[in-house]
Length: 383
Image (cartoon, rainbow, N blue to C red; front, side, top):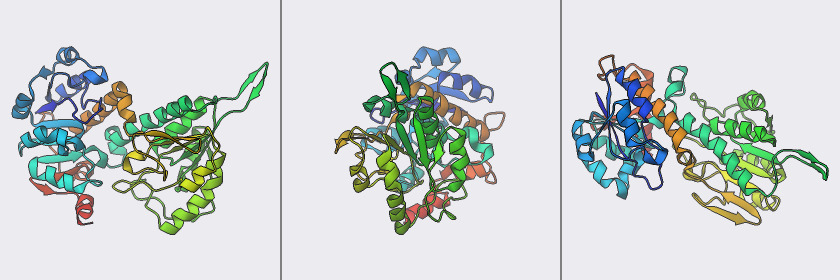
């Protein structure tokens, strides 16, 4: 088998799907890597690094002619104006792998299904023990949670840790994290390491121990949370009434915080609004909000995706590319997720062995032979 790697075409995307260290790992299973010149340069991986590792540099046309698998980071870019050339050259002889957002943009998934032989979405890797090493969403969320705290610390006009000096004692900053998934837990841990007083909230009560394990205090609201998690461990979408009551109960915690980091997302859905304009209006001047759900609509009513702006003295950040800003390590993590997935779906001779009875394959693959094969993607198309 041959895997082809391109220079990412999404504007501002610095990550790369495979790093030089991936080449030797794949070679053990008789999988070769070919790459486009400059594919890893923005992430800090030079062409020579790939060549020394055993990969071969080829032109785009040669990659399309020779590769069996095409690996991407932002595969969603294939359906954009920047991706027209690449998309047109994908054929039934190719399997594609990357972030394709098939639940959020099912019509794009359908177009890709009609073009490629097989399509795998890294967002759909199931959250089961066997697939942890392939969980690219968690890898990227981990880095996003870390970087969110650094962004907030850089914006706020006060220090995070308590500091005792000859001139007096300064109290620690109060940080509130909303949403305790992988990104939220990393944000809590990072803020705590920097000395802040950290509180966190999630509608799933079972995450309380996780919050406490990384040094945070779990915020408990008087709400019925008996049916808030799905089988994959994600938070379920809640009713409008529940959301209104949640917002009312959270208001006092939001207004008491110096930094609020929001991370709540639901796969394939618009992010829930946790911080309304009214709630934010009561925040202290100089406070900072970092909305990690900005790319899927935002957890804050006033978030502007990709923008930083100030509203009533509160600095609002809506980053959409935090993993890309840490391209060296995010590429390492993502590449290892991709490698582990490729090793899982191939045999020792480097041939496809993506068995229909395998849950990881079944859940990650959303298209084959021109047809959408994933039930949730089919449901999203009908919706």
